[in-house]
Length: 341
Ligand SMILES: O=P(O)(O)OC[C@H]1O[C@](O)(COP(=O)(O)O)[C@@H](O)[C@@H]1O
Ligand SMILES: [Mg+2]
Ligand SMILES: [Mg+2]
Image (cartoon, rainbow, N blue to C red; front, side, top):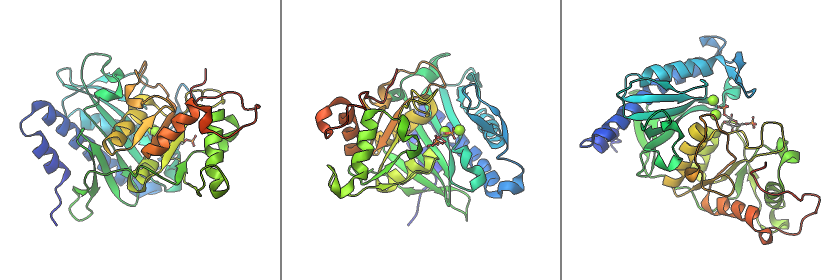
């Protein structure tokens, strides 16, 4: 079987359309930078103290040495593409690259960087928007032209949507090229697997507690089936698993200081994942509203995030809207909703 390479696939898709050609050039540049990041990750401690904490973001999240290196590699790669505006988790403000460029690109250079020293899967997430001016990165996710992520695991893969389904390309160790491995991935609508960081349980709102309790009750509870938990603490790895075999991921807002809107960032984490989910027949919401419909107000804005198998995401929405979707609960847990004040 002959598998197209990523660059051939993009070249065919973009042949007659200049904007598509710009998107293709940007995705190819991101893929090149991703290969360099994957080489550093593969060398691990041999490449230096990449997991060393180098500093902290304003909100207290730590910044590792490799977060900064990955950011530089991506920014430099995108300078070779028609990208006007670059926004990154690792830089406070967005930056102008090519003023004549047609695109704005937002990235999470390394997702799951707390896992580097543990030799676990991490990734690079990207969102590509039309360049519309200085606030181009604050367009709703529904305006994305392309989105995806590289995942550095047992395989280095690139998961991509250009709005025509979700495709997975795997790096071929023999040729070094990304080859199409899974065309038009489809997320199973139903699942018995959920992902949430259970250590935050005491901080969750009523609806999230009820949902998780009902899953845990298994065949003895209202769901009448047993559930399995998976939590990698690298969202990219959780997304990949959900694309492959279904499941649902939740990072809700909770009562901890600074977590009222959860942990994930709307512009360069939730939006690209939501676009990939939509194109793979899955769904992504903030618990209630579709992620793709939200209006970002700033580059590093956090958002509660629920995504994966459509029926399960919809069910979680009902837990927030409709108390009849839940069995009787203690009045002690009176507050509901993923979006806390
Ligand atoms: O450590 P926690 O609170 O469980 O958070 C884990 C989540 O945070 C993230 O690591 C956030 O991404 P970064 O590593 O880019 O900050 C997700 O990948 C992951 O799902
Ligand atoms: Mg991240
Ligand atoms: Mg990151």
